Image (cartoon, rainbow, N blue to C red):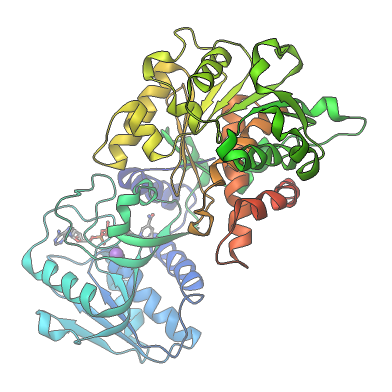
Length: 495
Ligand SMILES: NC(=O)C1=CN([C@@H]2O[C@H](COP(=O)(O)OP(=O)(O)OC[C@H]3O[C@@H](n4cnc5c(N)ncnc54)[C@H](O)[C@@H]3O)[C@@H](O)[C@H]2O)[C@H](O)CC1
Ligand SMILES: [K+]
């Protein structure tokens, strides 16, 4: 898991790295520029006109180093514009200014808006970075507006200029609006909130060689789940194991109008590697289940109280369950048992906040999307507020709340928020949540604790979607489910 850190902490990591790893700050800037360029060239053809607009702090210094390196890489149409409204220049800016002057890259000076070109093909924004620390004056806001309105493609260095990622003001943003931000060392927590779309449509993170040891020693409430973290959670299949080793999942799902949801969920359980799966549904559906997914066993949903729960390692309830009295009774019944439980969709729709057990057994996971979450926990004005509610509620109710989002938040009873790094818009299709519920329930059955199952379930689900999105414009839940075993294998092989 990677700690996500604030601007202030990033500065400390910067200072620590220079001092303890004996890397001069200008060399760190060079590393940052090299890493930026490596990422940038995959988005931009070297024939395009690239305008690099720089301030005079270290973000500007990065911009100057980037200009020199892009020139060396073969970019022919580069121009650098230095904004002159800064009180002082950073040392590393000055060093890179001298270095850039040794090249043929044109350097122009901008003291007023009309010193800038009327349009930009590609604009690299290296004006203000994490040092942005006060109100923007008219000079900056008019320049930002001009770049925002007249560029084909804006790429920001580290952070869009004028955006304070640690205390974002949602109501009056007047900084750069980038298509892409290439940030240094760690994702910015703010970019995981949907509101960050007004600041940058996408982001990428590059390693610039800051001390990982130092960054990981900082206490952070936000943790980024990457592939390595996922691998560390995936239990290895050992010799002499059998279906009993991998647990038995009970899937309670599928009202007459939504049979498909129950199959998607149960098939996701199957493909995430649980040993045995029983689908608890209406008996008239049994023959279809046998044909469509012969691995599944079935039980009659009307007799749910007769089930011997000792046989089951986990239960998934909700996909297409319906919201009638029978569904409600079933959800309440299973909520009072001790078997690890994942509640999704209609299982959440039939609950009120006060229905959650007063003495939680700490193995309850709920997986709401935004509407399900707000219905249960109240309306929220922003995603930041919603996340704070999720965080507090997970602590208070002692449950895991998987708040689904482009970057899904997994809030745990100990106040941590794990942020899932995988998933993409090609996966936006009904049934995708049913698959996620199945993934998590299967991992619970395979012996992971609820926190681990939620983290790995979200990761593997999104990872599969990401792999498929490289080949398909839309990724259906069925396609995703079929590919889960391949993703599990992939992840188990991370070096
Ligand atoms: N993360 C790292 O370890 C590294 C980061 N690098 C880059 O450095 C910037 C941060 O640089 P810094 O010099 O601290 O600040 P800025 O360049 O963002 O700002 C410079 C300058 O601007 C002044 N200023 C701030 N706000 C305003 C304003 N509203 N109006 C006018 N002027 C303003 C401020 O006083 C400063 O003087 C980071 O983002 C990375 O891009 C390193 O290169 C590599 C290591
Ligand atoms: K910037």
